[in-house]
Image 1 (cartoon, helix red, strand yellow):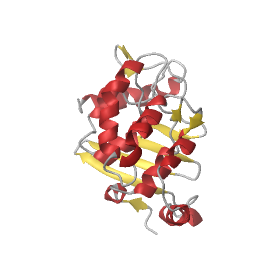
Image 2 (cartoon, one colour):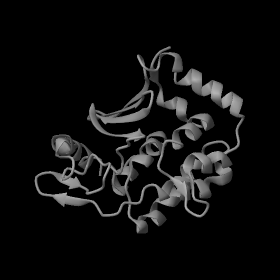
Image 3 (cartoon, one colour):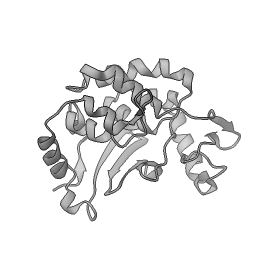
Length: 216
């Protein structure tokens, strides 16, 4: 199987998005359940979904040849999302900026940066779990999430609820901040943009900030 996934394959793909959002940090605050349980409100044939997942992600060869999405956004920006055996890794222009998995590194994109990808619905949804927002920004982002979820079959029936669960996992404890000579950073644990606790990422964050500022 060709390890490259065409990003168009994600459009209207209920199986993929139900699988993907299970990797996020979202949760139902009222019922105290994580997103993998909450998203069961999207009713699908589980047998078909399991078979699709096994084939789509090539589980028989995932360790040696993980599947990935590579998408050229413009002449200066290429995105790669790699579906490894135990994590999903994210790259801009071959620069690592986080992962979803047991030892996740997220809270990377600001709300403004995420919204710069809104005209690319699949990228917007892929980058959603990698975004960090403040509590007051939920009201701005929620209708945008709902709009994109409504385009996915079976998601539209519970898009308001799913959006709330996804948003719960994006809230940061402190805001992004600007550092002279570096650009935007944050102080969140498990964030590549936290160069105070993770100084090894300083050069990557500097390079990524230069890339992202061109999208605004």
